[in-house]
Image (tube, rainbow, N blue to C red):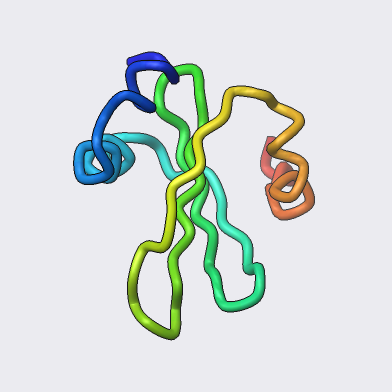
Length: 79
């Protein structure tokens, strides 16, 4: 699947596609727990609202520059 194909899906189909991706990180931002997934050659952030137990939005991107908030949390000590 390409980023363009993912973006053409409706929100339900996007959510289903994310669960088939690979979870590679998470971070906190205010009331959101942001979960990062990789699907083929792009990434998707799932904004989960912990207070309301809902997914507020999905944000897809392919630029590795967008991964910076996660870099500090990746444990490479076993590599």
